[in-house]
Length: 448
Image: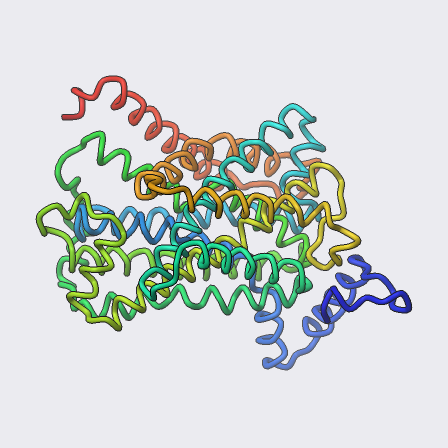
């Protein structure tokens, strides 16, 4: 049912009622001994984890992975991507438990538990990071569509209109299913990697001969941070927790949420590895490959795989930007709605919850406009955005850890010891990498 079809004689959408109906349907499936109903239950409950992980393979991620493969080949970064997937799962699984136990979004929990100062701190960080990341999504959409001769102004506008239509017209359950269908397009990079006929011995050997190609340089640190920034980012915490809440998951659904997140993390890693293998096979070793922008990489893909291969890569880039723009827009709207106690559900009609929808769509509009600025350094901007996300992440993780160790909030679902150790190790890794990069900027001679 469309949100627009609400006449004076029709009851206004009641988010609590819709969520109760969804939960009643889930409860009926849970009680059934029929295995087909259990499978249907699983399919009903999955969504937030797959979406957050596939959207994490966004246009910026596709560009970063493609440039990484072209610069460093099939060496160091494949094992690093697997580790990144494990890190992403550890982090995002915590948002599942937090949302299912508290029935509150991430921004609402920070504001309610730690006050306005830290609430504003986390919210401003999120909004800045989201706008910057949305810029990379529209870069991907405009660059991908340029392969088909579409001018940037039309592709950016088209991406913005599609994003707005999906958010404004659909209720949560339909919004999630449509988004999942779009996310499935991310898998196109897997057959492209197979079409490149990579040396699988090198792929396997990357795990047994793990080394830093070209030495431990400032440029290498920048790329490492960019890869971590595209694997785990602040918006992911806010998005998945709010999505779990809007979907209406409860503590009974945590196991399904964990499976959902693990499945999404697996898909994310496979696609990321496919991208590095693709460009590491086709572009690595060519003169100047380390400085290729995404347009040059697509041209090289066209030379090796033909026009079909180039078109499929371009479509994958457009899909990656589109699904991430959908997720980021919703993330901003959820966070703002939670912080300021506005109506905050995708189940609500525009006229009832217009303040909820405006921030996300406004951030997308700003990003689309910036991309259209003539001669903007889009390639450098993309990598920089990923690094900024990596810099913002430790603070976001610390808030998440504080909440997950608060027994008053979480009860029996507080973090276990291994989860805390893993999370603190992740924070420590990001702090060390950020510190090393800062030292490399101030004292570049140390990394030459």
